[in-house]
Length: 71
Length: 277
Image 1: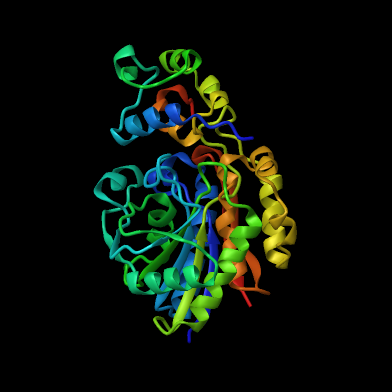
Image 2 (image 1 turned 180 degrees about the horizontal axis):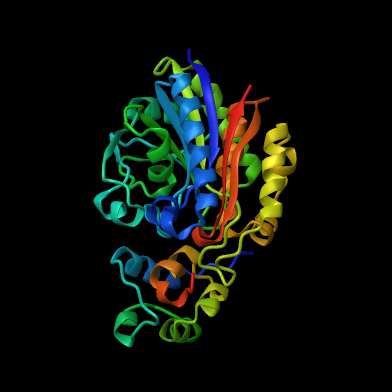
């Protein structure tokens, strides 16, 4: 079964469409989103590997957390 | 009735045009030469319609609405939009769509067992804008699109993509809305984008894919699972669904590799393959 987190992909889609790029997200940006504790901490840390493991789409991870990618 | 006059496969990546200067010059020029040769052959074939097998990258279809297969009914594609123009460094322009042809395909699909989704509004990114920059520089050939979900798994199987392409091929031959149809599929080959392995390219797998296309031996490609492609071709490698869809549209045709370059700076195994009878 492929890991897919709709809450993660929903928040990342909104940020990507607003052309937001971040090293990590803030509490304010997470407000109103129904996220698990693990998802919340991964977003706040900008932990791109953990986000991937939790079921965030890699294309969205890259668009939002672009500064985290050396290439 | 229409004649299928050409078919071609090409990688897409925004950096191919967006940051040409960061690639090694010899790699860039060999790949550009492949695109230019493809353009020369395509122009010589004089198509009156380009049918493109492509995929979105979550710009158009979000997780609230994800079609496996979607026919574009767009009047004119931004290829690119003003926003995309900045990223891809291609002047913004409009390329005519083929909504009447697309609607006929949609209806034929629904009647014939392919329940396509459809969309009247698609923002084109590198899946159309980059290859069309090379292949349709004057923007005078109308474009019909079939989008396949290659980016937000679970994805349709490669066999189903091939069957879908075969359906589109049969439709294109039988429909009178165009007389000289060219098929173009974009995407692949191996690339890892946004995953923990971002930047990886697997030339060995890319050559394996191209070799099978060149021999017209697509059956091993159709047996590939999502896991196998993810392992060997990366999440970007899932886009070979578009390639096998095109191979379904031109049964018996074989590929001829025009250029292949694994370009680390563009984080993509970049191929251009001409497909012929």
